Length: 154
Image (cartoon, rainbow, N blue to C red):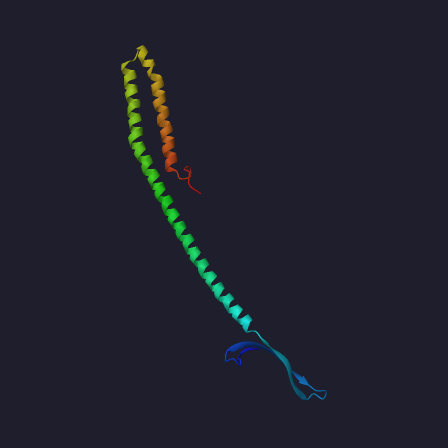
């Protein structure tokens, strides 16, 4: 058994006591034989280990909370970036694509007015360029709205 015993210095120390009864040839009880070991240092070490383990568990819990909070902040930042990218795409589409569409219409009207004139044919590359630019900007706006196509930091 383990127990505490008061040392002659007045302090209490932990002991490990092992003992067994001894019987004679006739079965009569002769007493006990055993030993006592001072395990006070071992008990103190165990207590330090328990306290250290508790501290480590508390530290891990704090680290988990910090990591969770950082994940929440990162998710909020990404969400805000997505909203901002959508707003930018909407603004570009509203302003620039409408301006390009208007330009495309003006070029088409000009071609109609110049129908039969040699100058009308010179508007073909302009029309193609405006239409290609409109298509390219629409692709860019879709990419800007789609978070999977945007570059995100690791």
